[in-house]
Length: 309
Image (cartoon, one colour):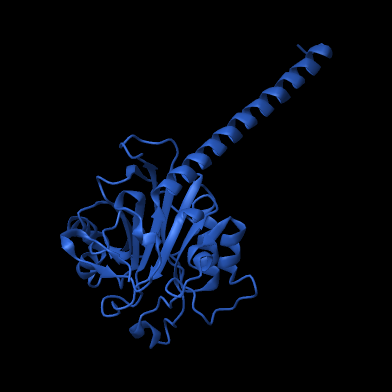
């Protein structure tokens, strides 16, 4: 059985004999994401998350006054979503201060199409093995979508109104249950995410642990929140190949009505993909500049020939 080795000598069995977690600690980036019940038992959730030695923790539905306490319990720096008159809930992204991620930038811009909990949008640079900052950014977007299909679709459309970085991970509670209306390509939200080049990492990996139900037993008993794979992690085509392991962690249904996700990314592959995406974006900017310059040169030449200059 493969195990992680968190601080304090604890070992947490993953239950999967998969090789990715055998990566040395300096070769992996560990992300724990968990949607809580409006901050209930957030301190217990932080204690559990620490066992997995994470680089990033994304917690949904915290109260703002919980964020600084959670940061202290995790031993991490914190960024959270903006205020809204609609709800007191926040989504927070916590990052290991001495890890592979550098210079977090919290966009915290208003998502006007989101009628519920605003997402937390934080972009990071990566450090190389010597600690030097690498070119390029990638964005982590923590989300909690609304109850109705129309609200969810509006919110996701807003995610792509502005791209803060060429590479992106979207993680959180997408509010969809197994019984939601869908066709062969999925629900409207799933189709839109696919059209935007976002891949469902659990489906890409296809392991039983990745495809577990994310609704806890208590959640599954209620009619309001039917069971399903509500909580998911998406990565764009640049980042998805770096995700080598994802599992839905059972055994914590007393803490939250949603189960946490544990995702492991190959850090070297992540560095390469973020750098490649940055170079591709830079090349496109140069191409646009050159095309604009050529158009202007042609226009000026025509105006000179016509005696307009």
